[in-house]
Image (tube, rainbow, N blue to C red; front, side, top):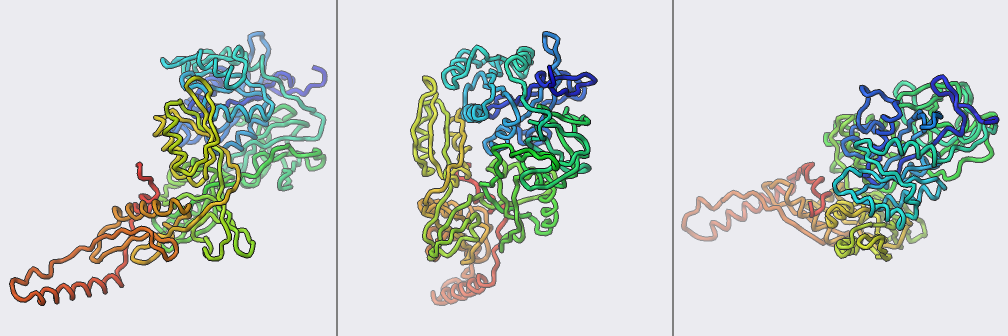
Length: 613
């Protein structure tokens, strides 16, 4: 092949034109991980004894929920029907909207993608979103119709959608059943025939893109990367362009479930590097690796820092577990660079941490990992977003915690983040979805029919309304057929107020929330109702109030246990009874002044739940 770099493969050598770097993209639950399993089995990388379902999903939570959270990569050796040997580098991606940036970096490391579409569900919101991502990176796309073994599979309808909705060539479409393995040999042939080989100059300065990293307790951070130009050898001194840090390469090689060390990786290869990097935070997804002595001219394009969009405070249920929570978050941060946290405290809940997450799924995953892997009992405050507040003197504050909300008298104006949502539904649910979005202060941007009975609706919605329980409600009103994808578009002016919850006149800071003025009364009523159900009765009356500043907007009262002090009075003057009741009233008043209302943990959780649950 005239000067093409050679890549070692089990004792043989391969030129760059025999390498295929590809990814699998799909809507949630369309069978991405199952298809990856079949490709791994078909190429014989893992023997049958060691094989397990969802091979690339390494966390228990991924297996249980059937989602991919952490992207993985695997090198598959494949001998084609014409006898030629190929290397297929599968760069697996997460499937949820929270992790779109990680998906875009994985796609930047590929030359082609398999776009998987469910034979019964057809094209959905994230199918379109992922297609546009692949097109932005100018990738070759092979449509794959999966689940053809289902009784409800309608291959002809999905073929039409691929032609009309996606504008792809349906003749190139491969029909497979990832569950049964049907069509996988044809898919492997399509990968080597249709997808382009990588381009790159092995003699140019090193330029490699980081698309993922994970933490190993013994070796530190293991960086996953794709080499675009140049060559990386064991012992080289490398530089990360984002933070200008330099490291010496201890080991480099391929990922094939296990790590397979190599002396060097060259242009077109996908692999890993161990270079004494202490934490995952020291590497940034999308950063560029180059040589310290002979750096490349410019970094790879498209690098962004992961920005949290949802914020919540995490507290241990038992206050003596605070040191354990501190250690657990430090360890989790080693593996999850996008998790942001800082110390926080609350009068009601004690010490905890204020955390930033990429989205609501990321929040749930972090909570579940802390509870499972570190055996902690946790309490989370209501998720909120970052509001932008302009003060009288022109200063702009970013507030994500109700406790830090400034005095309303000194505020000039406030803004909240908005998203553009694409919702794909069968048209019979149009009215229900329209009502749901308008109730959440949505603005209808229009709709279009994708087929005779499926439509895409576009809405502009405040992010704060979406993080509460929007996705669950959407699935409810569309009986599971609605699919939803979004992108954050920017800030818009909003009439914000801080709602405080008072119990016997004392503010409970952990229950304070920032809401739009229109929703304030409803949210305050909901909180008071839930607290009335959860707080146990005392010997004195308990007043639960929702307030904006000094203005009470909702109230519930938990009545006191009361002894019948007039039981011993039989007959006689009414003034005797009145005297006893007055005496009891004074005692209750004194008791209320010194009495302390204990709020159970279940009350905090109940306030977070919507009325529909």
